Image (cartoon, rainbow, N blue to C red; front, side, top):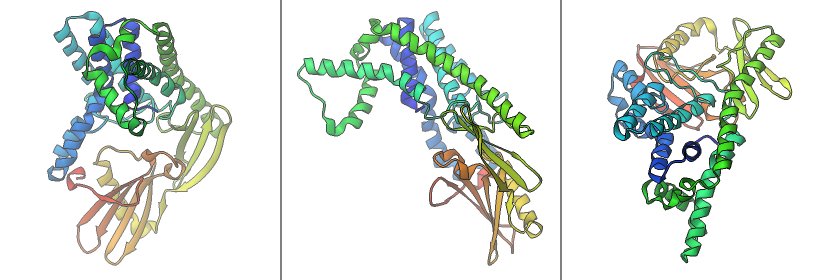
Length: 369
């Protein structure tokens, strides 16, 4: 699973191969996790977003949103230059830059839309070639963490300590914090070069795997295009499980075709999805209003818009979702619905977002024009 611990593990692999001491290892490990600290900025942004106008909202979203500016290459460059300024160590600077780049690339090559080339390219994009739950990356990234914790347990036993199994999860989190904040004993094994040969091999496998999968996906999508006789979006084909991708394309003016494809069995599970569940003539103006409002917002998850329009009393409700939503059962990214409630007696409207939950959350007006 690609998460903060995975990034930490990759950072430790990179630092171990470089042959660093404990202090340098901590710097590299921190760089590997640094982009995910944008959750602090994101929390602050969510605390004030209801008081922001549209332009300010979008500007701050680019800078403070999760997987936004702190997951960009220019941020990685600034941080790397800062390491050089502080440390004046060429190898440490290079390895720190590689660690933070590994984080950005690993997120970009998995399932998440990002803006790694911001501010030069503001459109969100993704490679989307590796599943979020990829078992190979999960195992590789957790190997150095496992050895560190195992060494710590052995050290505790030698000193008469013990492990309280009732609080294993909280102890694990505490151990990770201690690893980065405490003395160098946690990292003695890595700094002494223990398992370095294994780590070097794992890092090579990791790099090859991350480079190979985008190419393999390109070949698969090309085969799907040939079979379907239609262009298939590379970025619009998302991994829903290891080796299996969910795609869609506009079949005709009223219908999308969704399909899944895999490296092992080719095409399967082809479905047709109507673009609109509504009376198009009477609903068209409300669909157009919803479309304009949505296109002015961030982050922009919907690639293949589907509309469901209903009327109740003086309200018209337009639900916007993605054609692929029903076919990504275990993936929250495709469980987002935008709900626009228009008052037919006035120009007033309310907007809600539902993200893989049973309730809808009102959205700040500044999110939309």
